[in-house]
Image 1 (cartoon, one colour):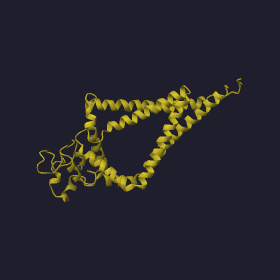
Image 2 (cartoon, helix red, strand yellow):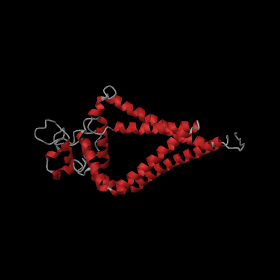
Image 3 (cartoon, helix red, strand yellow):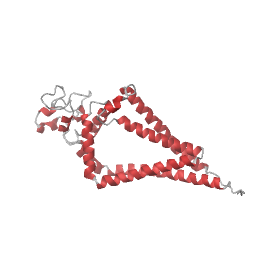
Image 4 (cartoon, one colour):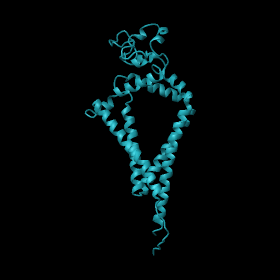
Amino acid sequence: MHYYRYENAEVSCCYKYLMFSYNIIFWLAGAAFIAIGFWAWSEKGVLLDLTQVTRLHGFDPVWLVLAVGALTFILGFAGCVGALRENICLLKFFSGVIGFIFFLELTAAVLAFVFQDNVREWINDFFLANVKAYREDIDLQNLIDSLQKMNHCCGAKEPDDWNLNVYFNCTNNNPSRERCGVPFSCCISDPADSVLNTQCGYDVRKGPKGDWSYNIYVKGCIPALEEWLPRNIYIVAGGFIIISVLQMMGIFLARTLIGDIEKVKFNYY
């Protein structure tokens, strides 16, 4: 026999539409990231020849854009539909994945602090691997150039790291015109120059090392990053706090909505 209760239990419209509004932004952002990723691949011709993905020896930034976009799209979809349809399974999936991501972020931060030397070596090896693949992918090339220009650095630890790239290698049998050079992003730019000189790094490393600093940045990007981090620790911490608050807000809204839905269902029996 069923007993009916007539208490005025209902799902809070406030939490329901807050949850929907919270997720619709991420849903649309995820769709935009996915579109940008496929557009970038189409511009490089990857969609016409998918084997290019496996032939790339370095890091393709499009992979990161697509991964972030896919994850954001799936979570945004689960949150939006779960809120509108009052679907407990989708809301539990949403809150569980967000909680797992938050746990991974905390774990990564702790491990990075404890194993700083290992992290430094991993970043160095990662950067050198992408130095080798600099000319293989236009997006990777633009990423490295942007990193070197913004941080006023060249190579992972020094400009000679560019010897790992077949175009910039300084061996005598290298036929490349860029032999013993560095990318233009390593050059010390003159504010008065209105036209970008992409050949400014040619033959720079043929001369004495003491003269390099007149034309290019001689500091590596790993030391530059190590110097940048302490100076901007409040910005980094603030960004981490904002992301954490947004994640906690999503979990709170989802769990509160789940509780309301369960109360309503319980009152029907």
